[in-house]
Length: 227
Image (tube, rainbow, N blue to C red; front, side, top):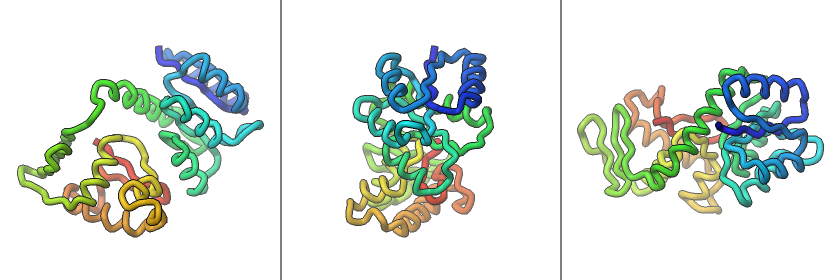
């Protein structure tokens, strides 16, 4: 049974989440604040954490940072905060996804299932070397890209950027994380670099670069690869 830890101080929302999750055969624990959440996470070892940022005793971002000190459990943030910098702070701290309130239960459950799948798949493929989609194939070991039967030439920077995205499929990677990893700490505010290189990658790999299917932009936040 997949175990979910719900960290939320709104009793009505907690009740709705518990009812919906238990109806789908999830095991559920609930914590009303950050301290209780960290205790339960250590004791119960949940498979997924649903976390509100506005907790009564501490900020949800601090809960994420504490969890990331010892756990890689997927964390899905549920928050009424809609500002991009709030979302980016949570993702940079180690959250796996960000869902803005109010949200539909169907969307939440779909994202939760995706997070569980990524966790289950991870041990089976510890290092991804071959990425295959309907329209292109990437051999990360050989640094070879093939689209519609033809080789695609990618620069070293394009490869580096692409590798980060495709080795964490479905996960949102923030602009700051990508810039720091590819260009270094001193360039982490140069978001125009990302726009240029992502546009180049889409031209080379996407069937319709203006409506990308694989290299997805989350405006103001970052990018994700959908395989």
